[in-house]
Image 1 (tube, rainbow, N blue to C red):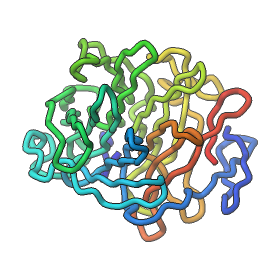
Image 2 (cartoon, rainbow, N blue to C red):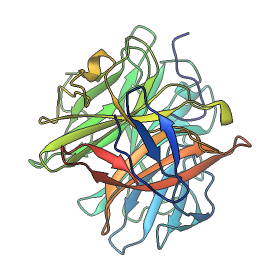
Image 3 (cartoon, rainbow, N blue to C red):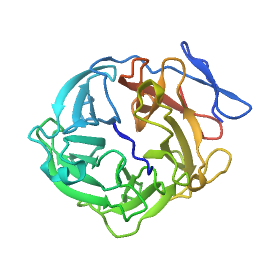
Image 4 (cartoon, one colour):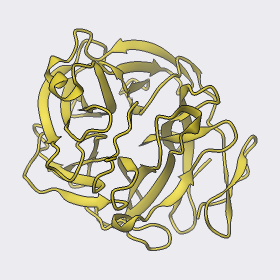
Length: 323
């Protein structure tokens, strides 16, 4: 989720230096680590990340015309301009004229970069997800490929917070959604990156409550659906937290650690606010040379949105935890 409120009106213990113990609504308490060390330009919201073929990292995040940052080591980040320096006029019918574009998802496939991103206004489901592509990922190199999916006030979903997942058979899937009836999934044409058919599947929901920012990721024999629960975009008062469920099928059903379906408000918490770390969420996950990596934003005590990076491991039952 980006700077907006898009609503209609247990974990494994891990001892880490600087970690803080918090309750997770069960008999156990989780020990959540603080974000790993990052430096430089680290004010981000809803970060999408890709590791480029040359080994460097590219982040795209919520901001005017989509903000870009780069890093050579996943620690020191620097500004790299914006995706659309001349603006994105094709989005303004959904943004009320604002240049602020939300929650980009970025990946590298078939020799080019693919970026899905959302256009909307705070509290509205008159929203759209667009696609842009680039051969370099650099500022100003992105070409508009047009509308992928939209939602309107007559719909029961909200077309924001996109995430592309390509399954082992080469099928393309786009997860999306925020509030309303929850997280949805559509299949894409692998050649065009646009919708393959009109089917919309439901992956997760909280009966109209706060759920958004889906991210689908495979590890071992499971597909994991990461989502953000609760309140974003309220600075240090944010209560965002990262939840997960899993399935043996890319289309679900996804269940949490207790077996509760994610379509029935299920989700296992893996990271929540603790100490001076407020409202972690808006997550992305990717596999790097050292581990699976969780990338997210959180709020500092002064309300500034910052980049969080931690590693993921899996317990003996295959459930992920943050370290």
